[in-house]
Image (cartoon, rainbow, N blue to C red; front, side, top):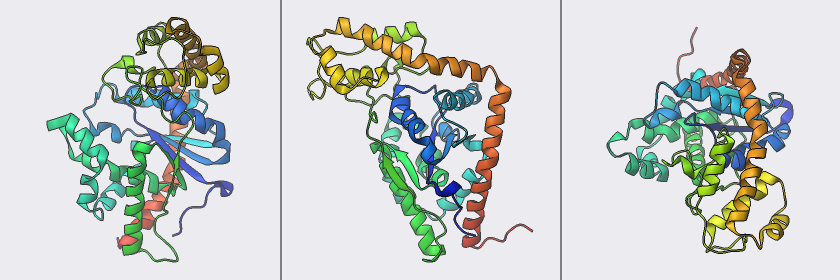
Length: 343
């Protein structure tokens, strides 16, 4: 059984987001908007990674609704079903099954040295579970199941993709052959433009859903009054005159970059517009640009969420399409490992 054929020879892209809270500007400007612009060039699989969501304490009462919210936001942000497949990770059981198979060939010390595990383990203390240690193997399964050619990753996730390649290489070496590898080795695509949107409360830290303060980020579904409040209170400095690329002014660079990305203006135009401004003059401009940029997304998301039948059909069709590829890869791996196929 060979590695799956791509649609019309296009490279296959895989990307997923956890259903923990709604998406923020960092997710949108750093990832989703970039892929909306180029999605017609690829065969895309975008999924809601709900299995990953329970590696940390989660709220069972909101997991399903937040899964719907993320799927609807994919569509609201412009993911086009003519080029992309949207599905829910837990709906495709091959993710869990391949993870077990890969667990059994992955050395424990590979997982123990993962930087993000060590960082999260320090934060969670006694709440560290086996899933937190093992989720890089689940991530590897996510990627390898779909014979992904490229995986968009930030700098902080490069180690996970390296682990994925190491696991695939190990399985290929032990159970495959050079002419026909069992698993395809994916390549990373490191995002650049807009890739690092920083926190509103600390210009040296990335905007993140895991930050305990909601004031640190602007969520895509935040109403206008909350956006105004967050920008009004965001961290700045006492200097007048706003400039890009000054390492001593990280908050200034971050807020100007947000304004540039949300307004659609060039860096040169923003620099000229804001060079003599104070924060009292600039913050209302940023708030207005943010509210205006997010309104079409919020309006479309509201319409999609009000039509659950449509959203369910999108996820059902996405699951069916994903299962065909995932089950084929899983069978290929099980055959290579020597399992008896079902009759």
